[in-house]
Image 1 (cartoon, rainbow, N blue to C red):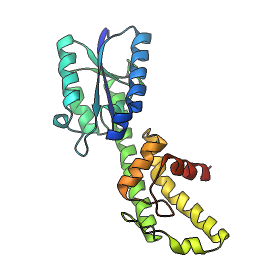
Image 2: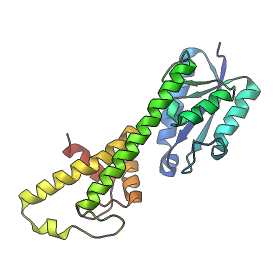
Image 3: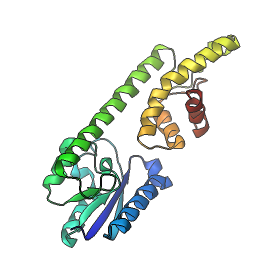
Length: 223
């Protein structure tokens, strides 16, 4: 029976880490789960993803600390969702082989190894689909003349009639929404989605930088 636990939370970007919003949601979920299940929550450790190769324990010093602490206390590791541990099946399997049990609050305390492997596989597939959709959308944007990584504006589009401009805006929104949807599925706020688009070098239809308001405009246009 689970009596004690170490909470582990992580966010995928430094921006989320600074805002604390992603961390607070995860912490709240873990605290509520432990309270409802009568589990003593010893402490919660938080980590900010540093980049590629994060699905490797040597790249996760805080997770390593959580595992060591859990072993010392004979406690479980608790996360709010399985993908907070990782989206790679092999990595999740390696954690299971580590002999330190963990619980994903979303799945409940009774989730068996088969269920955990299944959800890890689904999470990995979701990550691959998001990556594929993002790459495809970027290629379409390039083909349509949307410049990536510079300040070129779509001057020709501005000179055309309102009807043509509206069509261009709709086409642009339809294409870039694939990228936005991918980030929204991962739980990013509109502001963080804007930051990610700016990092990719994707410009708005008028060649400017993305903000939460411009991301919202795209989402609203697709409703």
